Amino acid sequence: MKKILLVLLSLTLTASLLQAAAFEKDAKFRTTKVHISSEKPIGTGSNTFILDITQAGKVPQGAKVSVKAFMPAMPGMPAMKSKANAKDLGNGKYEVTVNVAMGGTWQFHIFITPTEGKKSRVKTSMNF
Image (cartoon, rainbow, N blue to C red; front, side):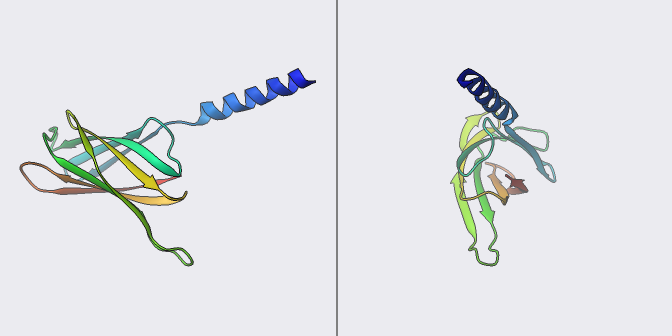
């Protein structure tokens, strides 16, 4: 009986871990495109994202990238936000760690300041 219970428990845990998929999303504003990905599913606390950025079909070199994740205030709950500067990994890829305080729909704004040209802001949302 104990062995059957142990087998059922391990099968349940394996099935739940297989369903936990990584996060991927594409966002766009005019000619700026950002592919947002994470190796792990989004959850409460620190989440690390890889931002793959192209502007007018080209990879920005040496751009400064920052991210603001926020949840607006709701009745009985104050607004929450997290800001972070992204680390340049080269070839248009940036890594950023953002802290989200609770589950729900979060607004995700990506600010891109290239060495030449116009500053861009790409907006999207994520729900978990």
